[in-house]
Image (cartoon, rainbow, N blue to C red; front, side):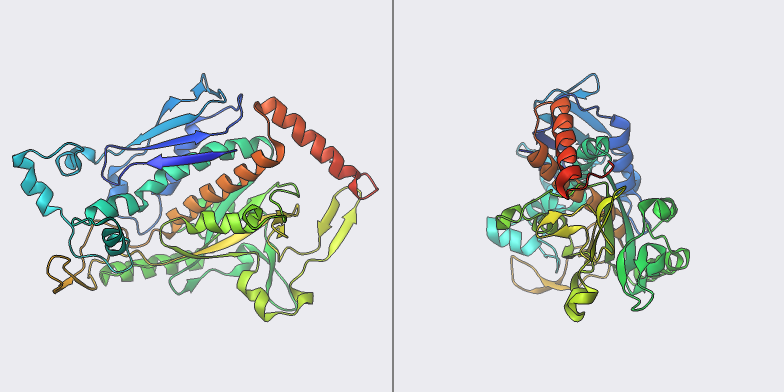
Length: 412
């Protein structure tokens, strides 16, 4: 069983995470983890916070000399902005001299679209900062680090994960830059190989492989910034190298598509997830939705298209997995929407916190982490093993069984 927990506030001293269930003997690269943390901080439209933070990981337990021990892995990520918030966010009762500073940072006018009001009503907080500090997307830095750790487990077995932005605001990237398109219908039938678009995405300030759309997306962000507004959009995650059979059809909570959707929906501001062609499947006949099956002695069983997104019946089917998620615009507006003051009920402008204009490129990186996490969970469930060597043997045995399944053994 693989599980993790995070702790920490947006302006607290640090974020902390604990991962339990990693096999012993897995090589962990600090450089790779911090590279993922840096990717999360990039993106056109980010705010001043990203200029302050330079996320670095500090290992607390579970790793020795670069390898997992099989015991819980714990780490922390320091918030470099903490010195400016120490008096305001102190765990100890504030000194009289600090009360004024804390009062100035009290949040009493909730932001529409944020957790402020619902969280305040649920927990009885009179200072909504007690809600926003944990509801903040700053927590996703810990998730990206967790994802970077388990991705090293998946990568050991040849699994690759990547993401891209396909739409930002009303600007949509050309599908042919990242998808296989059916020439007759014009619809997407599967993702292009990651290698064909990954470099362009990593070089784009908005993580989009379409150069023209990238420029228009940045221009849209500039217009939103000038208007005191924010923008969201859609990102896509693609995973290659997965064997068939991760997940299960036998119970609702074991279906991998449902688990992936829940994992991605847990990211702040994500409001919808679709697997494969998703909602488009509802407007097409079955002949243009389902993926015909074929067999080749060198390739094995495969699908002629991949509209299902690599998942059938709640399980991976051996094709690349792909899904999309929509992110709503960030709730903090520099020209705030109407709200009310919780002390008086009188109309007031919503609170304004330091924020981004658009965090969609960063959300795509977080999406990679959460997809990687759920796939790693399914991997550990399927192949088990207290050590990496034991897991490797289990994977070899399973792949050998797959090669004999059809009745005609095929190449690995």
